[in-house]
Length: 473
Image 1 (cartoon, one colour):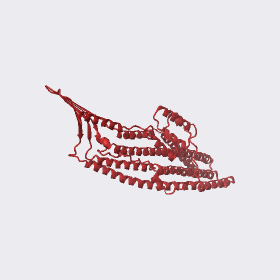
Image 2 (cartoon, rainbow, N blue to C red; image 1 turned 60 degrees about the vertical axis):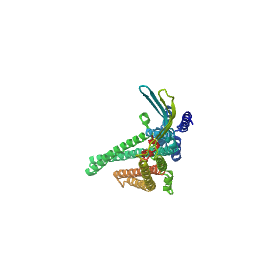
Image 3 (spheres, rainbow, N blue to C red; image 1 turned 180 degrees about the horizontal axis):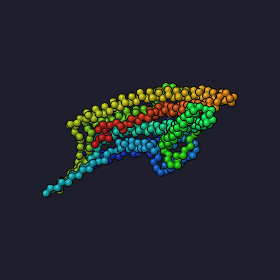
Image 4 (tube, one colour; image 1 turned 120 degrees about the vertical axis):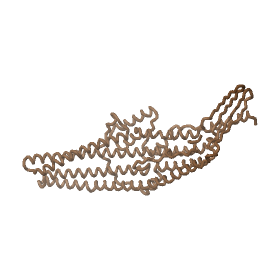
């Protein structure tokens, strides 16, 4: 084979290799899988806003949902459409897919040109080289990045569910604060009436200064408590507004006056640990990360001795002599570094991930057990207040009213009982709020990640060995 044919053959092989290494972006950027996981778990549709048309469609849907009293499901849907932090999280898909596409494409060839001139001759060298080592390791590199891309999809879906859970909890906090403020207003009215009556009776000489001071002190304390409750209601409302991404005129949302009623029965979940291990998105993402790290270790071992292999056509012309054509081969010689450090680093990273993954699985089992126990306890407490405490307080109030009508009790005893009844009802509202918060935490622990909102370890936090595609030359 002469140099000309060798040159053409090398050029042809390089062209075929370059074409075979090309990869393209998907139409949805991997978001369809994220949407499917979210719909499967909470029945809501997230939206990745990529254009002005998408933004206008989202705003139209949001305003339609805000035109009526906001339910908890509507609040979650608005958050999935309008929360800007979620929109920023969706960009992680684009970053991961870009890495995947890049892993399927050869790096640009290197062109070298030498022009040396002496007193009586000219030497010209030209070469075009391609990284053929990257071509050899490309299938493994693509498998590595595909695993990371899939792990990113699970992590993004888990983040969507986390925001949904936070929105649910913020909604229940806001409605509770609104309802509690209403009851505190009733207590304040009762205290005001009692204090006014005590003042008039003290002026008439029918009430001691001590009792008068007690009623005035109770009224003053109730006024301060009402102010704190009203401020808390405003703060909880603002927290909800932040999560659903509203500002300006859109902040005039309509919230219901009371929390949803307690369900007829608590969810009877069997083997919650198994359910969490099979459904939790952070655990699935963790398994994808483990697969990626295992692939990375295999790639590091494959490139232990030869990390750079560049090959391409070359030509040399010296003076007036005919052009000489051939090829240029560039190989990194393992003289000082035999790749042992790269392999050891990859193995340490992998074993680190194995132990962390095992701990995450242990934590997940504990979290879901704890969340389910809290859920059942809060359900039982709320039901106890609803079925026992509140009816008893109502019965006592009816008896006291009968005695007051029979002039067997004073008006102050009647007002004091009214305050106690309102306090017991407010305790039931607190128990009902705690149940709905526990319900949101349980769903989070079963399907997404830790209800405490601990960040999910991502594959991007793991250092890539220098022998991987990301670090190859």
